[in-house]
Length: 480
Image 1 (cartoon, rainbow, N blue to C red):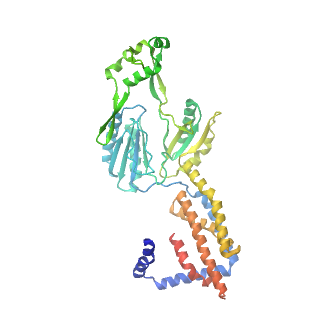
Image 2 (image 1 turned 60 degrees about the vertical axis):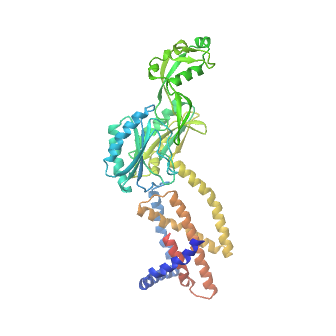
Image 3 (image 1 turned 135 degrees about the vertical axis):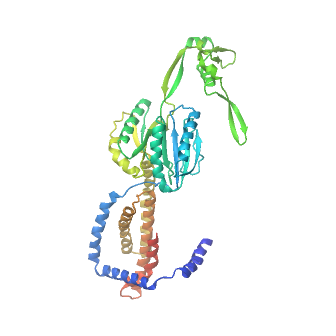
């Protein structure tokens, strides 16, 4: 309520004090507009004919408008996600990121940075999705001097990281405005068999690599890890009163350690683990295996026939409880995810899927499709309500039809504005277009109401008489 009072009083007073109109210039503009309206009213056929090339040019130009669901934020902030191969020690991750920090210090575009080892930096925005805890992962939050310096920093950073850390998977990414998707272009494959899913994802990644604007190509299952599996002798294990659970607990104590409790340290909870000394790991066969009943223990070599080293997938993602692997890629800042996806869609969807497997697009396309679909579901209801209100206001169909017929013409101005400003059409632009339609309807109601009023008063030329009534909404639409 207070803001409304200020807008109606203080704002108007300040405008009257400081905004002195140029009456001569205003008169010239009004005269020009009057002549245009007069010519349109006197020559309706010519006016409608003039719209044909405009509408045709708009229809031709619409496909050239770039599509981008949510634009990148213009804040001078970027992230560097750094992945080492699965199972890498956190000490190695820390050493690598120290070298990266030294490189960042030498870059003139970098103002400051913050590093997190084993986890993402603290979440400061809903559009920042943290990564799971992993000793092979680290993240650097980089503040640059300005937004325009980001491109050069990323280009040099990609080249330097590829030369100095060939086995790592570094990735620069910008802060997004609305979505928390990790990659802008994603192809998801779902099915029961891990090997088949890996093959499908490899085919998709190979197709992504053929596009010059696709980069940071990978999948979300990452690399398999080495796993040491004991070959259990079931007969000797039963004789010793040992089962698989006992062996698993013994090996866990010798590797990661068994959790015993937690210790309060300032405001943090530090886990307490029971783990064998490193010297005991040299000979697993002598590792004591204690029965779950706690009566006795036997050496591990007494109940196993040996060990085998295998590669096993340590990270498996599921969607709707079905194993799903996602081939991922980012795009260069000079293009949009929609253009890259449209260039690759035929090749990706041509990948032969075995029975029981399916593919769907993720990334920005998934979010855009979901958001637009949700909006369009409600559009028929909203349009019907608007038509009913317009018919009820004028008590006839002619005026509502005239008002609604002007809405498609807004696409002409919007299309050429996006092309001229080199801006993509995204979710925000869609919301803006819907808002613009509401402005057009509001202005049409005001204009038609004034025309009817002038006619009722016996004015012979209601169109020109209504121009003064149209000034306020016309200027409001211009500002919006």
